[in-house]
Image (cartoon, rainbow, N blue to C red; front, top):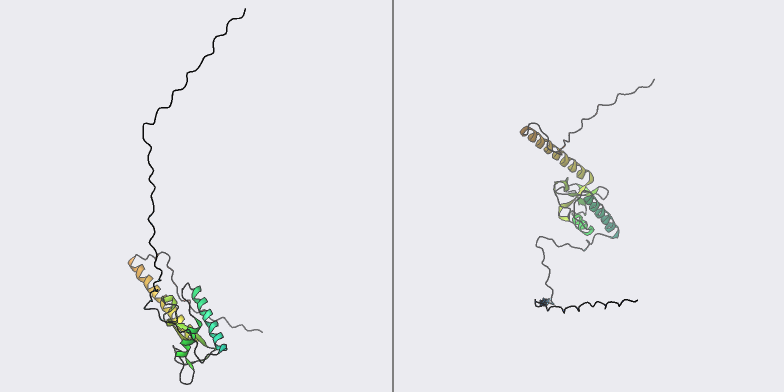
Length: 202
């Protein structure tokens, strides 16, 4: 005997969504103000009063051969300054005008240190204020000089700087109970070695 099937259960219909209790927030869009129009005319660059004007015309007495020599000297000077960590560049034409200013009535160059005649073989350029003393690598700080005079001046400057450093370290040690400043080293002059004994062969 078949039993009667129970009627299927019906789920109640879902209730409708409740209306929103808070109003929608209005998003304000910021509108950027238009940029002011740039003036079409360019302002001239200010001229530095301390910067000297460079004469880029070669002296009339310099031919192509001499220009090439002066260009090589300028390259050597600039590379030497860069090795010492000094900024600045000297043009070859500036060196030519430095030489032209040192010419006498006979057309000869003169050393700025000993005031003797300089030939092309002995020519060098000396920094009036040495680079080690804070001098600038510029044409206004260069004068023609003999190679030997330039070396003697450099060695004398180095000797005076060494003596000043040792004197300062002595004063520091006397006021700090004999202590040595951190990172400072003395540069004592090396004594001349005794002459080697003469060898005699039988």
